[in-house]
Length: 320
Image 1 (cartoon, rainbow, N blue to C red):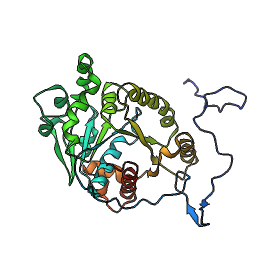
Image 2: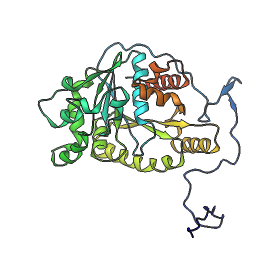
Image 3: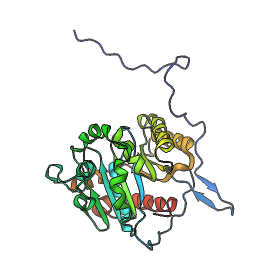
Image 4: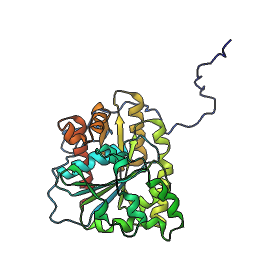
C-alpha cells in the first residue's frame, strides 16, 4: 500500500512560523492621489504617482561611460533579459552601449544569437591573457550602437584561477578601462551568485540595478545582496551605489504580486523604479529569435516598458 501524503497544513496564528518578508495590507491602496493643484495623479503599479519621463537629449560627447551591473544572486529574475533590452533601448536613445556577459552560462551571448561553442575569444581570455585586448574580443550585437563582450563556460575557470592573483577583485575593472573611454554605458550581466566574479563586477561598476521577480523567494534574498554591496562599497569601491530595484515578471492580477511590490516599496522607497516589467511571452520569443524585444516586437508593451526604464535610468544617471 503506497504511503499516504498529507496536504500542507496552514499554521495557526498561535504557532511559530517563519516571518514573511511582507505584511498583508490592512487597507486597499487608493487608486489615485491628488497633487498640489488638485489634479488627480495616476498611480503606477508601485503605488506611487507615475513621473513624467521626457525623451532624453543626445549626448554631446562619447566616453566616460557609466558602468552598471545587473546583480541578484537568485537566478531567473530577469538579469539577462533586462541587460539585453535595457541596452537596446539606451542605444535607441543615442547611447553607445557595451554589454558584458559575465556569467559562465553565457545566456547574454546566446540571447543575442551567438553560439557559445564557436567563440574564439571571450571575456575569459581578456581576463587571463595579457596579450588579448578589448578590441580582440568585442563583437557587434546586431543592434546599431550596441556591442557585446561575449562569454561561455570557460569563464567558470576564471573564478578559481583569479584566487591566487594580486588585486584579484580589480581584474575586470582593469580590462574594462579602455571601454570606459569608448562607450556611454556599460552593462554587466552578473552570474546568479555572490562569488569572486560578481565581486569583480561590483568593483568595476559605478552603480547596481537589482532585477527582482515579484515573488516571495526572490524577496527573501535581497538583504544578503545588500550586505555584499555594502561590503564592496566599504572595502573596494566607495563610488558604488544602488541605481534602483526593478520589479520583473509582475502580474498585477494576483494578490501575491501586489503584496510583494508593496513590501518592496516599503523596504527600498524611491530606490524602486517606477517602471515595472510585466510577464509576457514576447520576451521568450525574442530570446529564441536572438534579438532584443525592442526590435523583435517593437510596438509591444514589453518594448515600451524597457524604453521607459531607459528614460528612468538616464534621469537617475544624468552623466550616462
